[in-house]
Image (cartoon, rainbow, N blue to C red; front, side, top):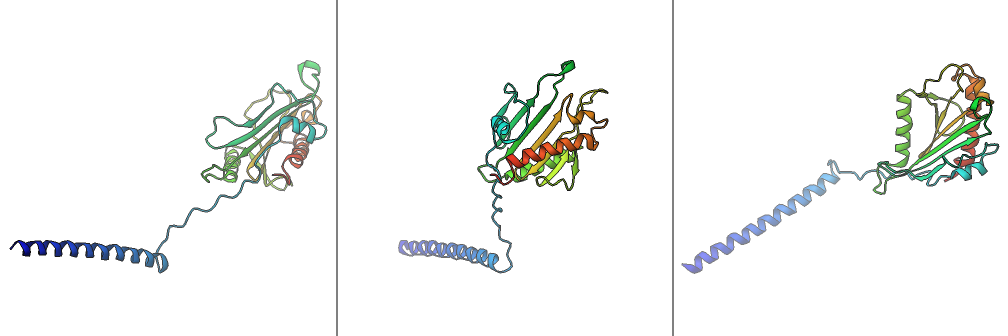
Length: 225
């Protein structure tokens, strides 16, 4: 009797093992068949587009690279990794000022800001996607995208959030998108051509700003990595 019971138990266990093996084998075959014939395989995420720019010039570099800039205000110059950002960024933020003129106004003031959005080490988000997203967010918030300016991938006139009193120095900043970098350029000053404009949206204000932006872009981003 004992021998019979033991034999039955062994047979049941052996049968269970065979059934489990067949079940697993069937699942493997089903998965393979699903991937090959009519299945929906999980495609790997697309590889991030390599960052076009991986470093930025510093403020002193800008002073040497861009012709005819006023003297650099070294006290306010900032450059290097941007702290507090969710994803890795580099930033260069510089102000160039000429000698102080009458009424406490500087004759010329140029503000140049470069921001590089770098691809996260985990591969997402990609730096270019972040830069495009920031540029488009500015357009949604009131920046005026401009076509055919012949600089960068895209460009927009930045909406000023400061209400300037009548007679104040004019300001018509521009933002340029180039790959994973945004470049913002502002210029003003008592003797600067932009201050002769009665309207910040007029060519009198915008053209000198665009000319400066093209010089900065040519020196710092065009054809560089």
